Length: 215
Image (cartoon, rainbow, N blue to C red; front, side, top):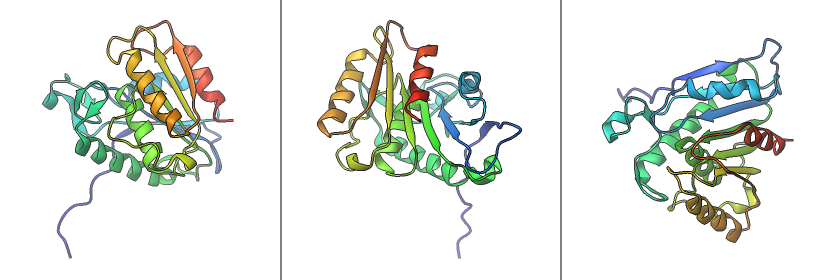
């Protein structure tokens, strides 16, 4: 017997249609560095009206790593490198949340889409590539493929991937996106790319393109 408390579930916000029922699509959207669980609820109106949207909050206080008052999924090093243990811990917490989705949304989900912006996109992509078969599609908005994640390990079972990125992104430069996409291509993992004349943000066209890969 152990006295250790179980790891608590990530905090989250929920938008659930009144007519939500078993088999409905659930989008789990992860915010960026220094933000919070309310942030990506702003994308909900652009998604299909019958989708349920869950936006969890990252487990790490961003201020501890110099990221301001919000929250973070991992500690960043440089370019496409992260502190691996911090990302691994967040992937475990995301996995727990996905396992708990039926209780969170109060129905049995059909398709589960995992996506996010910046750190949330990086985390979503890493999760999908290391947890084969767990999600129906993954969206990476302005994130990167972490250098230590080997896409060839589970390439055959990777879900549909949408990767949108700004050509003038000052936070995660476009060449880092190109590097990650090249690694996916080398591993034989298909993906849909969307490149936009923007900086580090999301435009409506990205959301439309991302939704289209879900089917």
